[in-house]
Amino acid sequence: MESALGGRGFAAGSPQGETRPHRGAATRAAAERGGKISRRPVHGVLLLDKPIGLSSNQALQKVKWLLRAEKAGHTGTLDPLATGVLPLCFGAATKFSQMHLDADKSYRATARLGIKTSTGDAEGEVIAQRPVQVTQAQLDAVVRQFTGPIAQVPPMHSALKKDGKALYEYARAGVEVERAARHVTIYELKVTVARIDSAQPAIEFIAKCSKGTYVRTLGEDMGEALGCGAHLSALRRIRTGDFEESQCVTLEALEAMTEAERMACLLPVDVLLPKHVHVTLDSENAARFLSGMRRRGPWPDAREVAVYGISPRALLGTAHVKAGELIPVRLLSPAEISQTLDQPLQQSFEKLAESEL
Image 1 (cartoon, rainbow, N blue to C red):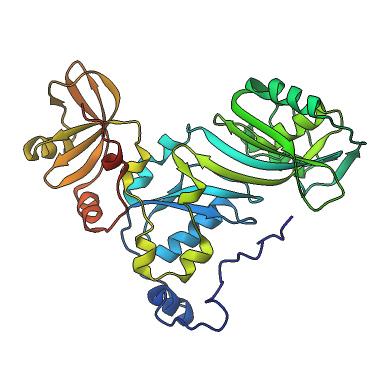
Image 2: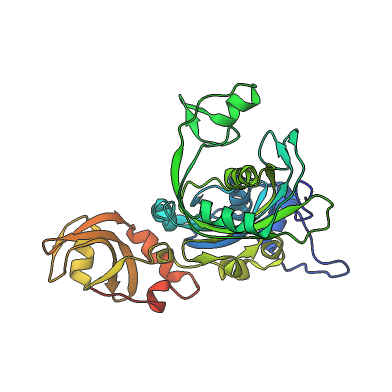
């Protein structure tokens, strides 16, 4: 497995032999002076290909610094040892980041067979070793066994809390506590023999799963089902909701960009609302809606609605419709709307797949 930062550290400079004094001028100048950078309102979603060795919050803070953004958040954590799709939210997008927590996710992982570790991954101590004799018939049986609704016991090395304390804190103290099984769903599972440069047998699997699935536990449980035990040696998130790895940008690439190029990587706020139906209001009704007032109209009932102003076309917030009433849920401020309109962003999902009530 790669070293802690996997050769993808934050402070990477320009390619060898190339000089780019104009790149990231504002943030680099501030760093050289040792002073604070000037923060500014930034609104949108950036899809980061998180490198190995960084926590989700560490990755978020680095990108926030590069964008000089005032406000930032993410849509759920990704383990430091994992890489891949990490949606980062800035400004007005943070108001809707919680909506993405329930999204289905897909992972590609490698599990080394015959070796169990204390943490279920390559960082833990080896606690058991067994011989490995795995047939294709066994792999096929494992796919059938672990596809569909399954129960998982959360690992001790996880952020899940018991009595107000994270499980990994108990684990670090050498204490194991009882954990109730959690029910999750594996929608798709593909398992193959891994082609890696190692004498230790391994499997590679791709899993599309519901929220709350522990992929490390899935790898361990499949190892037990194969009769030899296993631990995860590599993990990559390849999709979360409608976002996939091909859309992501790396930290290295962001560091090498100009400020304008970084801003161009931002997706609009409404990419977080792909399944919301759309309602468009005229100027008068838009103003009243933004003040928190309900609006009446010929709209069918809908639980998730994205509301737009007509001129200029802009996201105002979310709502739900009941008995012909448009009821505000989360609203953008007038300042956020104005700032969003001034930003050059990538094409909105709203334009790609519009669904108007």
